[in-house]
Image (cartoon, rainbow, N blue to C red):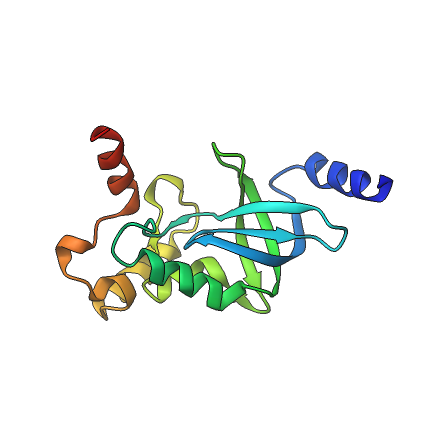
Length: 159
């Protein structure tokens, strides 16, 4: 028990900008959120940093979730932590082997570069190429290509 507590304290005490660790993916919530467990049993809810995927109720939402699952479910991943979001999720760039999952989700058309939270400008180029070649969500009719941040705002206003 003490070992788990020490591991949790070490992980939470590290500065967010320097934090990097490995974990095994144990659940996929949607196209940009998953759960993982470290080798000492610590569980984390992780959101892929700098990208946004369609919500599950949006067109391409379930396909984005499946794309993320195909990349990481049941695998060991490396998290490079960027901080925490308003929901307490760990924001991270995620790697599997030599694959940057965040970039791959955008490249394949399963995600947008998240304009409001973007440090890596190369994600905009990957999105432009995916759009040009009509990959993933970009193969949908234009009316179905609503960015998730706009969709969420529309849902909030309609309540």
